[in-house]
Image (tube, rainbow, N blue to C red):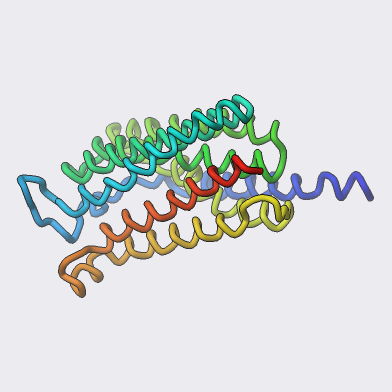
Length: 254
């Protein structure tokens, strides 16, 4: 019974991983919908098209810079793997601010690479950190290096398939959305009051609201006229990233 109790949690997570991967593989390739590049707020200001969607990325630059500075302290107190997760995550946040601004200045599939690539660094590093802290340090370190490589590959694989006429977003979708399935299970199976479960709920809550606003981009802009759902999505995503920053800051005191 002791052996079962020790390994069943990891077994369940592995099963969820396999089922999710197989399910996505059974789907037909998912090409990038070109309607994705059409945003409701097209207003230009100071010669910058889609001005609000461009400048609403500034918070990512600020939080990314704060996180990179925090990573210097992590380097002195934590393992090399944990430092790399922290550093890579906030480098990703910083360059998300730049890449997203570039993309929104000229929305197209090629520019989308500069938006999605740094976001992938954020997703993979943060998910690996949760595994590292809640499940097992060695598993978290292994997950970080593996997911980082697969995540970067998923972006270039997607773009290659787009330019060859058979766009396939499935691997990128897996990298982005599998953690949404796995993290709740991790929090249920590996309860630890000394860590940051409450803050994680804030992160996912803000991110969920951001995705809702993104989906209703045009409706929100039509209602408010001064701000679009996509701009609000950027701001709420920045709130989620700030909560992540607070998690790493708190982690330094544990």
